[in-house]
Image 1 (tube, rainbow, N blue to C red):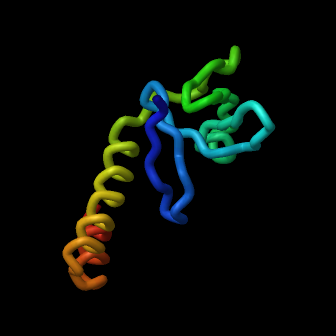
Image 2: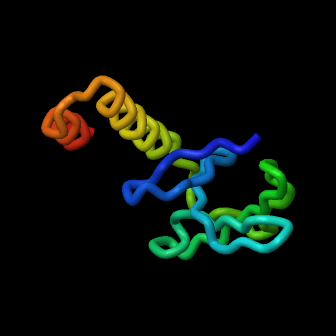
Length: 101
C-alpha cells in the first residue's frame, strides 16, 4: 500500500523508495506521480499507481539522491498539526514548533 504525507499546501505527496512525488495527472485506471524535484532539478522520476500500489517506475532514474530527512520533516510537521488539532494547542505553539524545524 502506498504511503503519503501532506505538503505545506495540504496536498498529498507520495513516498516511494525515499523519494517524494506530487500528483501529475489522473486517468480512469491510474494516477501518475512526478518527483517533487522536477521543477528545481529537472528530475525525470515518475511512478504510476493503480489500486493503491506502485505498478510502474520511470525508466529514467532520479538525478539526485533520496532525501529521507525531507520526508521525516514533513511527517513531523503533519504529526504536530494533528496533535495540535486533537489537543487544541494554540496556533502560536504550533507555529513556533514548525519554525524550529
